[in-house]
Length: 403
Image (tube, one colour):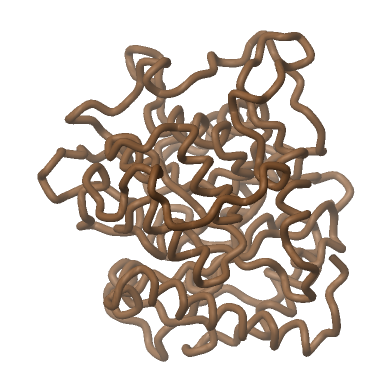
């Protein structure tokens, strides 16, 4: 299985495809969100104070978040030009000269690697949903100050930044000056549905554009609706095929309160479709509350199926409403009831890249009202420090990982 399922795309410049959808910003593609639009199956109402999010039921309106000011007076000092990720408009045309403005992810990865000091501990990233109500600019500053190597973003973050006056080149500028890469984009839940009457898939289109803009590596998906198996397979295959044209992989996340609720179910979907750019997301809280075993985690890691690992922890006893607990009451890594060291030991082949391909990315995903109560900066400091301690203990227990 490990030899057959290669879940990461080979490096190098993407080859153009005549079937590839048009490139350009959502404005150019005609799918930008107006004052009223739908994302994640819910309506985003400007000024209404509510917005849909797959991991929360009541959020601040993402179109009017705090901390999203234009970057002309950004406090982060710029890096030297030779260390910055290349601007979108500086990108050459593709081999067939019909794919302008696309990020060469292999070049982007080299630049990111050169800016980071060698470390025995896997790089730690901040998931998009840890700061689910924080604006783009504030999120970047807080993550960089805490020490994160990268972040996750969502469609709402892109829309928030654009509507607050941040240009697309400035989105990349924020990230470059902060020394952050974008490792994942959240969160598609309607990938199995048909396109709308205009032939567009609003949130999917925005995330693909955001991936091209930032050099993101992965889009995360889940399944919350009861859908016939053949529809799920067909929709997932379509999504993986489309993502491959953008040099992206698709990470499948199971959740105990979703329709795709176990590691076994998520693995079955990935293996059934067999897309080489797909894999599994292992979230400590989701795995623990779904009743998963270390044996199935180790098997998935050894078979090269795990593309992302998300660190968090759980209360000693589950709350009656798992959805409420998972969205608001997770614990900092190492401060709950999950045996994270045993869990990471089972994931070792994925973390050190010994199963197949490069190592899985590692992020903290701590959805906690208590953690974010004192602001984004403090939340980033708490989650980074806790995640780093857990990873250091893991590495110390095994010796330096093979990275």
